[in-house]
Image (cartoon, rainbow over all chains, first blue to last red; front, side, top):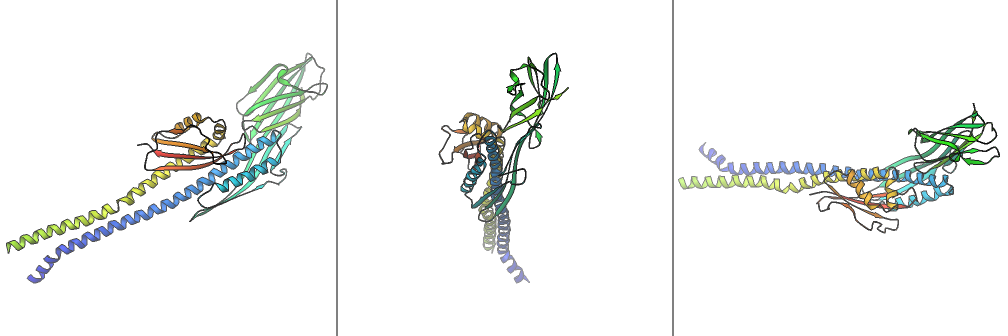
Length: 259
Length: 142
């Protein structure tokens, strides 16, 4: 019995060491687990980079379509949109370094769009400048792949109506203008109102008497002016030209309702 | 007999010390993993913050306009306002041919931290439809 006690006493140091080794092993395992978790964070981080690039390309595509539409609506060639998209595609593909990148686009051909554009500057008080492009972006790096399809529609439209009152040999004209960006009220950078004279010439309304342009701050503008010294004109034509805050140009013509 | 007992006591002490040393060695060896894990968190925060700031500046086309106007002071001011205190930055703008456009540093604070994040952002200027590459470096100030 004493011998057994003696052996167990002699071995107690070794037990202590083995226990210490076991604790060290547990600590190492815990740290390895933490390390593995950090690796999954790292791969999430890579996806952060991937998603960040997608977000970046989407905003760039939107700015490109806005810039192209501003250019085309101000008299640029319709082909500008396609040329710029081709440039953008090459630029994006050559600036992704983590792996493969492919950006493709398709100009909207659904009526009323043609080659991605819809420019309607009507005579019934409605004017539309619009562009629509569908994009498809594929990205991959060592371990992940991501695909994104998105559509960019940029539309600036204007709605105008006008009333005219004949008082004491003068026309009192009120023109109400509503501007929209993608269907939501938007602000103008510049508005010019014209009226057609008795002889059929367009004249800038700001040169007429008492011209006043009121900005309601919510995309609604009212222009008031008086035309005097001219014979009475029924259903006078009014033309409104407008640049929105993105420099997209839109115009429309309407006829005054005589009161 | 007494001497033998005393020696046994010393051996026990040595064994205990050795056991403690083994445990501490395990703790010390796994410390670098802790450090790298902490840095990853910093990287994520800085990356997300930098990207959000660039996206916000670019949303209405302001960043492209400021670059085409070569208004580097205004860009630096806006970055200083939008980034939180304690984050230093350095921004470089390249054109399509990879020429550096900013002739003066667009920066705030010194970048001398261990964790520096570099964010690349591609940009379209709406007004003249030129493309730019922006490299924004961010770091926590010491």
